[in-house]
Length: 431
Image (cartoon, rainbow, N blue to C red; front, side, top):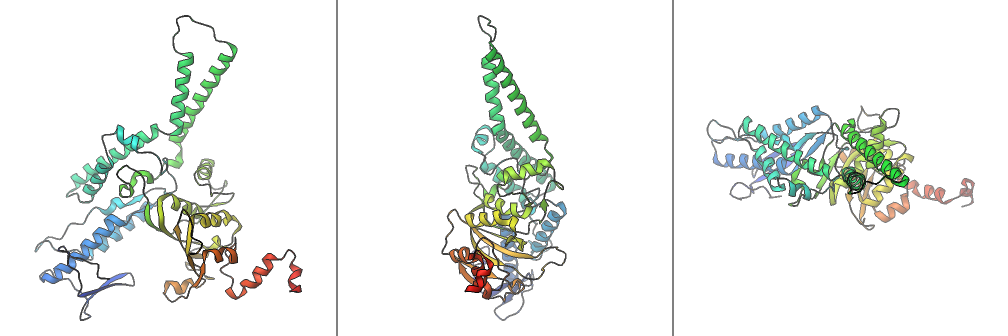
């Protein structure tokens, strides 16, 4: 595509670069595979370009979260290995130092946050010595720390900045502001000294008791929120990645979200009541039977910018399961459907469910004329051989309806449409 530029801004136009079996293959104009030789100036130029481009993509374009610390470590390691493949010599004996890319891949429960995406950081910034710019600068310095001591200093600085943000946002939470208001009312009514002491009337005593009770309840609620175990691994999307914040600290969102979220039913018999209450409060899509992958689609609307793309590998039960009606309606409302690729067979041997690839585009106003690509040949999609059936958003909704019966052969759609519109099954024989 002629987009790789070296340090001087010159294109690597004599080379062909492509990905083959997840490996980057570089060939010259004679079709020969590129092999790094630090003693050859042109070879050095190509190797540096590949390293710097990979470094730029990893540092500025790739961000990840996983609840499993081992998965986080493996991901970081794979990114470092990818950079090492194109490491180059700065001189005859010294290799270019690898950046601290671990800050882009973090451990936490991405479904749980104390603070909403829209939580106002401006007040926190006004009361803090930190700015969004200083936070971004600290992260940049951390990535390029020259030694462990500097890295530790930056880790502490970043931790202090986030701690200050959290403290200031907490002060502005609804529970805290309600408590401050109630305590102020109580103080003005019943604790200020008066020139002439008066005995409280019955209605005043009742009001005082009610106010005191409300204050105690709010204090208990705030303490419960602080102590709630569901927040132990909470991930604060609001400020963990400063790259998606503008200069005022507003959350802009990501361009693309890719994932394979967990498929796990959340029910009273296997989940704490606090967890269930949290999910139902934070994710309106959550219904009687909550599957975690449903919640990840709604999380996508929170952290994705408008016009951004989300692509998940999730169970094909999303197509017609009765418990996925809310999810399908949610997707129709908030996304343009781009690709649905499913299969009659299992893709993952270890999985108990059939899965598919679902690609949606976030849109405040879904475009009914935009086309959708559908296929039940997911295996061929992976091999880049599949022929998609192309259909408009409008036709998809009217023809396929509330249940996305893609696993039914397309030649049988007319029969199912007829069944759908007949009140009595026997009437089918009259047509």
